[in-house]
Image 1 (cartoon, rainbow, N blue to C red):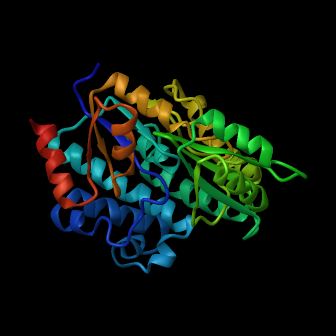
Image 2 (cartoon, rainbow, N blue to C red):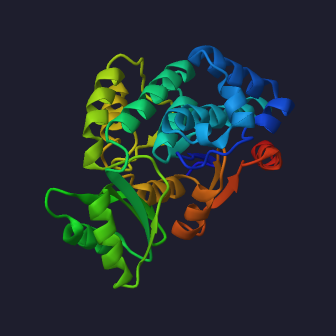
Image 3 (cartoon, rainbow, N blue to C red):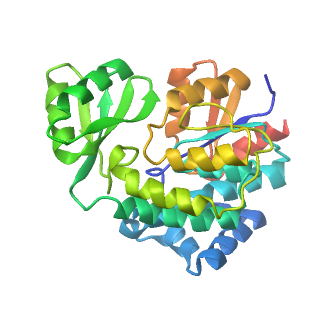
Amino acid sequence: MTTTPALLFPGQGAQRVGMGADLCREFPVARQTFAEADATLGEALSVLCFEGPEDRLTLTENAQPALLTTSTAVARVLAAEGGLVPEVAAGHSLGEWSALVAMGAIGFADALAAVRARGRFMQQAVAPGVGAMSALLGADLAVAEAMCAEATAGGEVVVPANVNGAGQIVVSGHAAAVARLETLASGRKVRAMRLKVSAPFHSPLMEPARERMAALLREVPVTAPRGIVLGNVDAQPYSDATSVRDRLGAQITAAVRWEDCARGVAARSDRGIEVGPGKVLCGLARRIAPEFRCMPTDDLAGVRAALETVRA
């Protein structure tokens, strides 16, 4: 087991207006990271992150590069100011890209362009209103799978999309099938919460996006990670460039096996840092593996505390 903190990278939904602003005022490497993002995309992504508006920031095609940039800026601060050389990492959905950038498998600029396209592909795969996602609280995977099977009918499907652990399963699919599942949940003492998302991510409805992403990934320069990165699709470490391309494509339609990823991280390190906005992954980690200590870097105080831990 490594003594170096593992890095956990958040996915879409963690974004918030103001993220990265304090970081850039404090650390030159963070300013350089946001400047690189602006130059790569040919637009002021930094202003969108720092000032909003929120409705533009939450658009899938904006949220994904914005989160990648903010998480990369924090990771670079931890490296430049704390000397952190991570050995283990994992990311939730979009966060998997951030993890691969941090571990040297994909260049930041290449990843930025790819996730901007990824966001557009996912948004365009399904017409508005056709799909939906819902979080089930108090259900394990077997219960969720049974309800999905019962709610799937007439060509309309719903499947587990995020296996987050701690009794939380997110399902995704056709809106009518999701609604049927929510009705089933109410009779089985499972709480269903409809999510405010623009598309049914990690479901078979994303197949057009997966196909387009697989073609794009063939053109993205990729190498094997310099440490362990656990993939969402199977919670196993990436071994080479081919596995990176294959699993980043498959991830778009496959379920995010986050509970297994978190257990895999905790088996390799007894502590971790959630790199970027939000504290969701730290909260899940505490419930999945209570012995695993996790620090958020949601604000400047969190980044400073993480630096103190890394330097100690």
